[in-house]
Length: 355
Image (tube, rainbow, N blue to C red):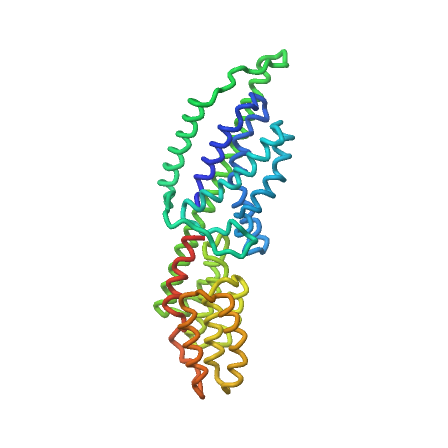
């Protein structure tokens, strides 16, 4: 997702919408307010995650959130800055929707139509560079184009409002200080956003390393490092690290510890195929009578068929489950191998870069 780019988007909206505010002290805060608004979906998402809501990002990057939050923010813009109610609503909602569009342009998966149960939406073309320098240059050029077009084709109001004060120095000094405060607010927000972006890159590298450890069979190392990868601000989608921990336990032959982690991964993301599939495989390969194993497997397989009817690997997983159930005696799992499917490994590798 863009980081510095959202700030440029806020400045562009401020440039295009703030021409009627004149030179009041409040007008000096307009650019900072628009930058804060441009980051609002991310601010709300991080607040939700820190508050224990792992799926907050899905909600805060939806059209419904943009409309409702925009309608709540608009009265504040109207009272503080004196903009007309209709203008305040349009600016607030447009800023929040633009945030989602820019995320999609950087090939980031989103659920814009939440709470409708639709697949994640994303663009295969990465229209905005991912690296910080490329992103900054891209948005700087776009911002200059917006400013140039506006100043060429939009008539500017060149009349300044008469000052009501008899002291010509005081208003100018006050406006200057207000601009300084506004710049400080914007600088702090950019610093926090850049710091968060850096931490996310570190988490992304750690997540990739964890996946490589799992592939290479370093299961104990996976268990030792998993907690650090899952810390805020995490880059992996909900349940991915829990699933990797479950596979590490299975690789060590600890089926008892793997089961609750698979259940945790299923609960964290009900749309994630592999934890549910491996849970069914775990039940099918459990020691015990076939009838007992079938009783455990049946509801899981039914959920797999109902929820993931079109998944490319569903048929192959079901064949594997049937084969395991057909065996009269299931030996205890030997340490040193994970049950993770190669397709599951490929899915995990993609889950960090598009979140």
